[in-house]
Image 1 (cartoon, rainbow, N blue to C red):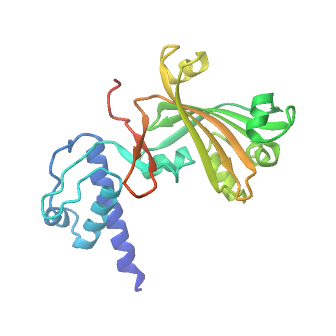
Image 2 (cartoon, rainbow, N blue to C red):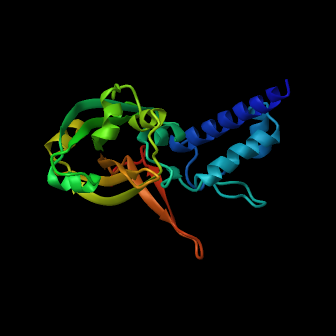
Length: 259
């Protein structure tokens, strides 16, 4: 079949990218270190140059390695990047970064919306919402506490879903929910008692908070959330180029010590 070689090349591309990404994340290659040459990688993986170049291109797009341009490619950073605008799902981000996501649900409830939350969801105070409170894990280690809130029209899908089984975002997509865009507000907040207990840190520990609202194409609010990350697990980096719109990237600093 003609698709066989293409499928094999795709497998090699993923394998090579995973090897390099993991080696950089775990410190086998440090910032400033040269990576193996294309020839060395083709021999190591019994590959042609095409998959090697695809793998290197993927790492360049993630900001991990230099562009080369006649010189040996070097490691620029040991943190993993993902397009901020594309990331709504924590699970999706982790998978893209070769991290195993996990979740431990603390509470799922149908309840009336209090005034400020109702305003955020563009519903009336007292209207029914579905709220989810979960601990999120990265490679089985606590990383983030999330508080998710949905108007009942969308939350009914969440009530029927096992929230310990995986991505709520993906479940909503699978159920036909039109998730078109999201807005985010980023700040810092001290860990309250629930945050501290779940993240295994002292009360008051600074956490990176991302408050998100997701919308349909028509502008209906699907979700209002409050995600609180350990600051040594994730950070946000703004990259700007003169003359072009700026972009945000979510960066995992999972293997970097706290500062």
